[in-house]
Image (cartoon, rainbow, N blue to C red; front, side, top):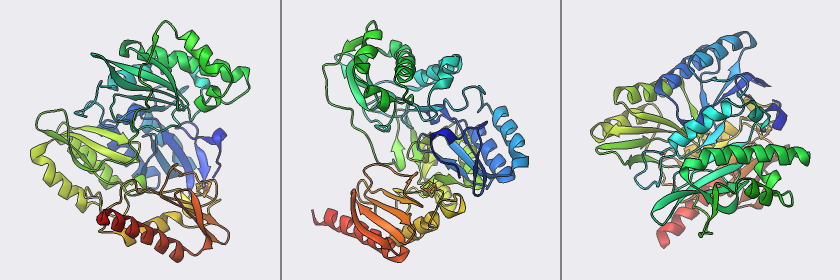
Amino acid sequence: MRVGEHFCPGVLHEVQAKDGLLIRIRVPGGLIEANQLRTIANLSRSFADGAIEITSRANLQLRGIRTEDLSQIVHGISSAGLLPSQLHDRVRNIVTSPIAGLDPGELIDPRPLIRQLDRRLQADTAFVSLHSKFSFAIHGGPKRFGRDTDDVSLDALNLGAAPYLRLSLGGVSSGFVVKPGDAVDCMLATARMCIELAKESSLPVRGKAVVAIPGAMERILDALSQMLQPSPLSLPASTVNEALLGICPTSQDGRVSIIPSVPLGRLNPEQARYLADTSNEWQGDLRLAPWRGVVLGSIPKSAADNIVAQLRAIGLSCEGRDGFQGIAACAGITGCDASLADVRGDAASLAQRLLGHAVPSGWTVNLSGCDKQCARRHGATAELVAGPLGYTLNVKGRRVASDCSREFALDAVAALHENLLSEVAAR
Ligand code: SF4
């Protein structure tokens, strides 16, 4: 597999992996239509490895594609409306809460802003030069499901009677807010400044790189001074690191969201079709989530228990005891030439050890086939990184074992899980 920023895939930028071609499909805000998910499921079953992978920015990925089938997949994706601009194939990372518009506590519904931002990005060829990992995030507050690595983000907060959105660049708060009506102009202007400043300094167009240039933040704030005002609140918005799960209330009367665990962020065609059909049947609202999951939103409460039972029957548990919660693994030995271990198989073995147990708060485990750690999430409870002589085990950022066998490593992580649960029970 080719790795690194120059080989970030898109629909028209396929990457050759060990198991065939790999493509990534943009889904701004994770706002996918049921029929689009069904189309992708059918395409994956016919022309890829059958799985639909959800990425950490709530896009989709297909792998195991034969070269001769690529054009049919691209045609199918385009016909489903998932390739609206060929030029902007990889200008795709627009992140929001997967319960936007459904969250009873949110300050503003960011979805109209997400759609407007997407339209305007696609209408402007200047943004084609954005780095393919550049991400915009708009959070309607008070929770945010983004990451500090989002390049430009706006977080809603209440200032007096009206909500505003606080601007951050590369995870660094600007200390300024913008009115929702100026939010999209603000994001686009910030992105333009990032392109200009990065070019001047011969840096990649990334928020973190730009914000580190001396005087860059001041120049951006100066350019945006007409639409910004100082924020009296300096505290950062609280980031929600854990996946939501189960039956969750919504702001809509009599309707709930159903949120299953998606093992390793991969749906099979049967699961994807069930989600799409159920969403259609109940006029629901389907979303992809940045924890590499799905939200079956806006479902009548009266139908929820039956749907949860059906989901369980097809391998999408809503109870949080399937063992997979919090576990992420890279492509591993089947999909990547660099992999030194079958990390997906080992992740499944770990899940088997944890099956039936509750999940400690904040529990996250990353399994990587080599030290590039593509699936890495910062702040993970445990990390297993494969090397030539076995796994390295890190717990809360500290190395605790090297060159250990898979059995030893998986047992150690399972013991850690048990200890954390015991600590919680003892409190
Ligand atoms: S971390 Fe995994 S996917 Fe990334 S290069 Fe290493 S083996 Fe490949």
